[in-house]
Length: 386
Ligand code: SAH
Ligand code: SF4
Figure 1 (tube, helix red, strand yellow):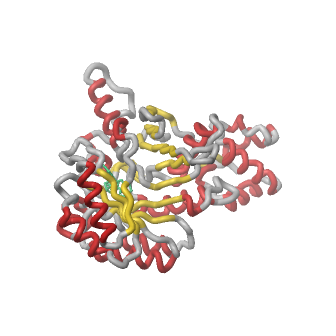
Figure 2 (cartoon, rainbow, N blue to C red):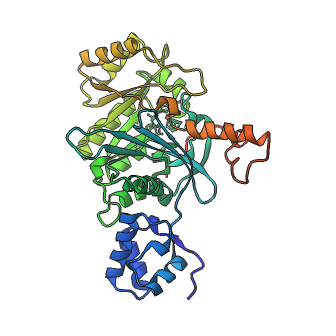
Figure 3 (cartoon, rainbow, N blue to C red):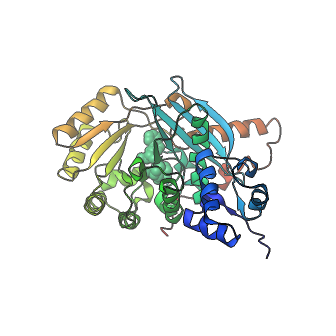
């Protein structure tokens, strides 16, 4: 029997690998060996699967592919805490992933959080977000989400460190690519695959209500963050133009349901933009909206992109925080890391594209590097919530 189609090894859950290995007439422990090598050593080719007998190793590429990402650019912040990567997928699609490291007092290893992308571009069009301004290119497959973590795990492994947390906060709207996002979470948390604790994963969403309810029913212990950004519907619709009929009240209700059904408290993200949503009045409105809901608020001073939005002054951020606290709302200000390396979602790819476009005015750019150029931009529209 011929198998013209190979499947990515990093798309398959361990039970699916067991079935394929048994189809190849191999004992079950070969599946264990294959999985251990794949998910502990992050090989980039089948030659690196040294524990497997040579005849099997040679047959593997006929059924499986590994599809490692290609690193196009790496930018490290001055303090070394943030590393931003521009990665190329097999078909040339460019996406961003970020590693954020924080020293853990009394611990040998830093906390190493990987921020992954779930789509190339995004259809939601948030006005302050560089990815939103690119428009939507395509969904990433589960293996393309996973490969971002593996690329960074391999990089960390070389210096004796490991990935401790994963946040789905890179390019794209994870819950608009629901099935692939959930498959990636299962792969990243399965004890016979990447094996990270579910509680070490957070999914951030612009607030797709049905998908949040569906997520709550998945029996996963992942954290949820909802990007709110405004205390009322009129302002939210200006900032998140695809918010549509979803009201801020709906978002508070779904956060409460999520907590009831999973036992996990929801975080509301609020990108603070000078003169737009950082006023005293906005803070008071937000405190009133969230009173008694049990949610946590994460204030993120906006990372200025090409747009016209500016980060508030430090005293405005602190005043906003004080008003929320006085209203009994649990709240933190995100320490902004990596602003000088364009660490906000989508910025590096935008920078890279501008650089490539500038270069191509001197010499033609290589094939595939102009994907997603401005001419291909789609008008923002809500993605299907499959
Ligand atoms: N689409 C999802 C996840 C990716 S965006 C979502 O919107 O939640 C992850 C977070 O980065 C969101 O809270 C988003 O609002 C925020 N963000 C995007 N652009 C930003 C910028 N320029 N400055 C600060 N935060 C930004
Ligand atoms: Fe998409 Fe999130 Fe950016 Fe909005 S903030 S455009 S939902 S990636």
